[in-house]
Length: 374
Image (tube, rainbow, N blue to C red; front, side):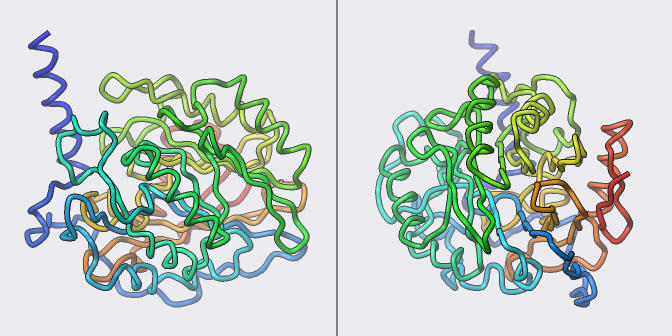
């Protein structure tokens, strides 16, 4: 038993050294392997596709944490977190991200969370940061992840109450599983899944089919998100089988995504690994297996591939079928937030992973980041 605990601790330290940072390292940052390139010209913008809808999606959003103290909060109140990349999704109908944490001003962590290796991995964003999301244009977020439970029921209630007050749609909790909303005459349905308590279960394929098929009966377009797969730089590739992270079953994300599309999902956005993963086309529906970290201030590493922060823009027809898309490459900077990456490193990485992980991915990615049906 003692030997097992020692091994688990060593594994934990190895992971968090690659994709999480402990407090006290704020002044001495890790040397990033993917430093920001010069700002990219506006030519990367996708031209409108006639008679289509546009969905823009990003990965993890964690704008700082006030727990255990304010050292891990940005000095500008997070107001400039997205200022360098706002134009990348301004014309999208739906702007989606994974909200990796709670919106809560005060309160202690959930009792079961206190065993974690570092308190910096408990994410309590001030309620006012909800306005930062709203002003950036986000109108849909996933709450299906491990950090929505960091501050127990108080954190979940405060988060959903804040999002409701701002008109930002969300889903993924047992108490708030789905959202149905209308934009420009199109009815959207959203749901999200994870292997964590209080969220819709990633491992229950039968429940997933029932939830998604009910949404499809009500909606024109069904958007599905999941939090799954291993975490960290060692988990870039999709094994097409169940993945474990320490002792936790993190699901078979390939089986989950195909099951969701069979049930009626039109597009799927993955998160959880803290790095980008491959993309796949299945039944003319796009699957992005992980969009990595998008804007994660402190506590989460942005070194190397962990700092790649793409925006995925996808055009669908009104039946939910894929028309085309584009990966817009960005990277994270500690002092500037998320910034354009003229070297397009996220594009080349996702292109490589897609070619490596799938013999027939059903799509091709150009060097400029365009996603085209194969």
